[in-house]
Image: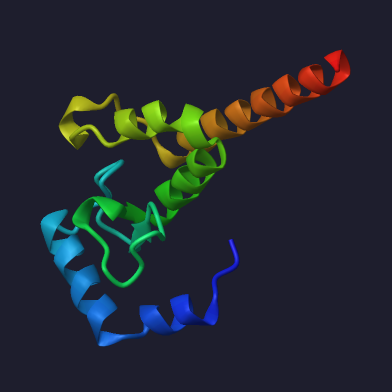
Length: 123
């Protein structure tokens, strides 16, 4: 995703650093998907309120899960239920490592492309 200069500047601002630190603290410095504590980032689920984000606009994710969240966003409405399932408290989720998660998302992506291809052939 390409970001505007405003977005990049915002990420270097003290306002974002404070908001980011608060979100990390709220998530207890754990990935909100898999519970990992390494290489965390605070991901925007929406850019509608950039600079005035609500807590629910942000998600703490590790590098592996960041890719998964981006793939879900590409699948707009259909991905919402999967994202909600991924955000269950870590102890309630079946354990799935990053490789398994990535494999599942690639499979979903292939299926999505096949559905689109079938739809265009019918028209």
